[in-house]
Image 1 (tube, helix red, strand yellow):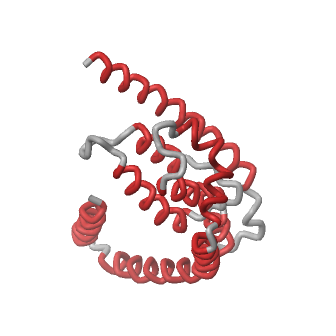
Image 2 (image 1 turned 90 degrees about the horizontal axis):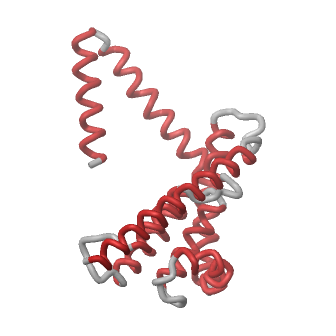
Length: 198
């Protein structure tokens, strides 16, 4: 879907550039945009490599079990139907850890693996379970104690105090997470009642 969106944006840009006679500006924007993307990538590459490597070491050293135990008091009430010692819980714990550190890119592989494990527990393959829905909410609106990636972006673009936004990130993350959990619980409860009526 995203490929179609990007392709559509490129085609629309080309059409409007030809209509308005701004092909030179479009060409300049393409070149400068590509240059900015490379500069941004190089700016955050080091910190991302460090954290991704650290998370891989934690996984191989068996720290995933420790993380699963640490986050168990939080995850158990949110995922009551997921077995306590399942791989899904381990991957969700790693995902949560990466998100807490603000490492969205590092959290993504763990999130995908967690979703695969949750799908194995899914009795109806073409419908998402309550656990899968809750995990999407938890992953999307996660609390970030240290918004590493965002601060790296700010530093790359010349911010003298890239970490000054931390308090705002905490407040918005907590509000978004609580709102998401409440909405998910309400809709999941409604879905369970409907299934019981059937």
